[in-house]
Length: 149
Image (cartoon, rainbow, N blue to C red; front, side, top):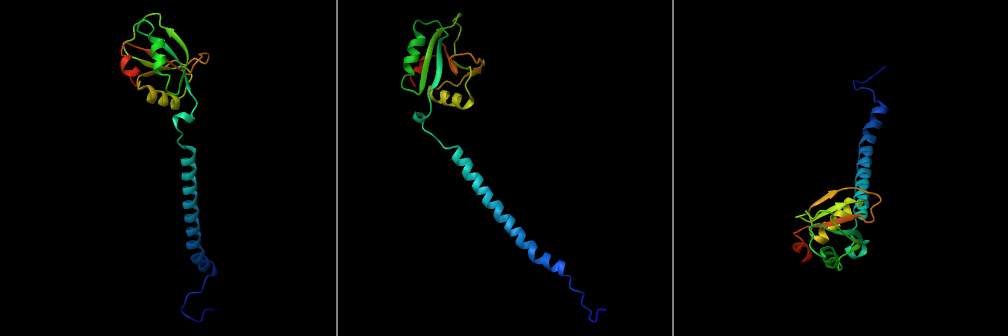
């Protein structure tokens, strides 16, 4: 029997009132800590290496426009870059007006590096796991602008 007009104290409701804000604060703190740990780890995994610290990109230079000794001259122009020329070749038909990078078995990160080092922005993919280089540079009639880089 209740002798007062006050409602009876419910111990469970009182405990909820105390622990609910504490629990929410703890969850918020854990979430913030996890966010910063994740952000730090992702920043460390994307650490920037200088080009000299990365492995050389293997390419084959192909003369695509028929000018004599162009593949060798173009390869010589790449000598101071982090590019390893593993072969020289000629196309069967010298029809290339524009220089292009062909992805043979390389990845997008190496493609970006190669584009940055050479200035060549055109690319296509013709994957071939048996090709001796990651990329092929087919040199077109616009070769002079890339040899000056």
